Image 1 (cartoon, rainbow, N blue to C red):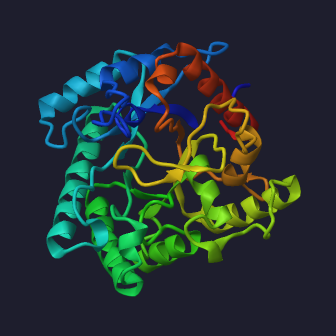
Image 2: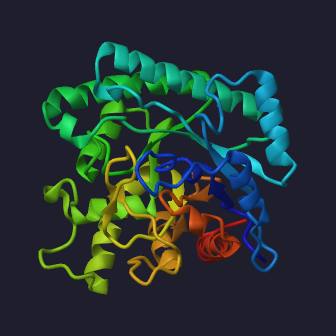
Length: 344
């Protein structure tokens, strides 16, 4: 019998992240309606996407959406046979979690509005699982100017964010990505999580593309979990990847299936981070179903603190995203993960 969990979701934000820039050749934003349509149309051997995860920012979803706006959103998603899962809180635009008092106030205001939207979508019935995604919203370079004080500010801000989330019945997942100050290496990420001290509420979003660079020590050489001279030998790769996932798996609140060629890439205003590659990219380093199991299984037991997993195709060119075959291949890979590691 086919596994029912985790549910398979696509993400809407790849239609926005790195898009709409003013530089020559920049891809335009892909509308939320189009991202929903591309998601709903994908199908492989009778398997379809179960839902979509959303970015709470215009031109997709207004953070100040009215109740009527959210009802219309729910109707639009539901009419395609999909549900809504995780939501990305738009906490950028200032100094973030370790910025000024005004920066931190704005950060928490955006978080509060995001949690309120999550609860309303739950009440409508279109959302039954998922988290609110956050990060520190400031760069490793700025963090490095005063790492001890800045980490204290990160911890204080996200502790308050945890209390806000709990008041709405929400959970928070800090994006496991090297481009955010104070969590740019796995050691600093664990320091942040342990300092916040709300493990039932605050964890990580583990993205297979982004987290791979933690293992390599890309922004924190002292965190490398592979030997010097490492050249993707399978044994050394698996040993390093297991060490990384064993450290971070207990904190996973949200999981993204992805492929990575082990290079870093940024687009528009987005700092460099793990590159998302097509499922079948010839330079991809991950055996997707196999390496997903490092996250989803602990000593051969399912890690079931998630109800769904998502594909994140950020910074894919629009020419690829507009091709139905792109989404069919992604869906096929995600279903292979579920069949290998899922549950009923």
